[in-house]
Image (cartoon, rainbow, N blue to C red; front, top):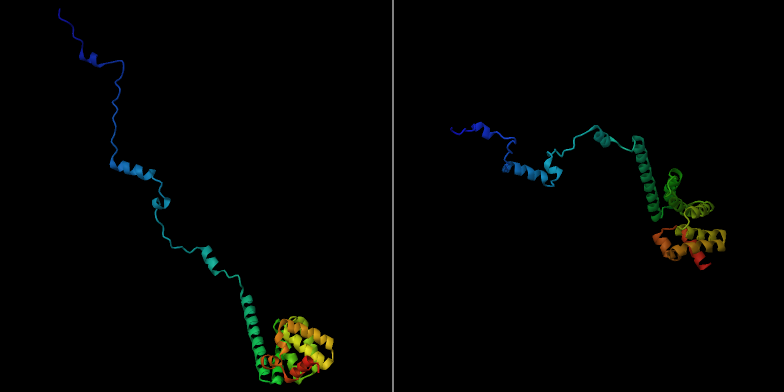
Amino acid sequence: MSACKAPISHLLLSSEEPKPIKTHKIPSPLNTRRLLIFTLPLSSSLLLPRENNTIKPTSNNVFAASYDPVSQAERDASAVLSRRVSEALALLEKGRELQALGDFNKALNYFTLVVENYKEFAFSDYARVGRALALYEVGDREEAIAEMEDVSISLKGYPEVHAALAAALYADKHALFLAENQFSIATLLDPHYTDLSYVKETKHWPPSLVSSLQHFITLS
């Protein structure tokens, strides 16, 4: 008998399924580049689309630009104040110019304008000093001394008014002790007031007050 040959299909069948053959894919250059990009610690500004740097106007920006903390009424009040300060300083300077020229009558008028119309300003006390000096020359000496005494308090430490008051107290009130006190304050702050030429040529005192100071210094 001839041997039986097993059918070919029987040889191919098996109880276990054949294991798939593992293959390694070679990454394409494109995939490698993508992987590299996403693994690098890049700044987000390089990956995000670039925006236009121009600031677009918004309602908040417009409001901030138009907002002004100073009201129109405050602006008007400030302008009025600045104008009044300028006017007062101009009158004070004019009075000093006339005093330097020896025109104490006109100087008195300008100093008085400052004192009466601009008394809310602190520098009006300096106009009161000029007014007192002019009054001593062409006006009432009693009023001049009263003005000096008052200003010596509001401008305490201003040597000119203390020196002028010392001269007037000695010459007109014969108050040597009070005059000495006032003159000590003046010369402690400014020793120039012991020099008659200083009060005459630099401070432009009226002749009558210069004479009173001379009498006080010499005790004559």
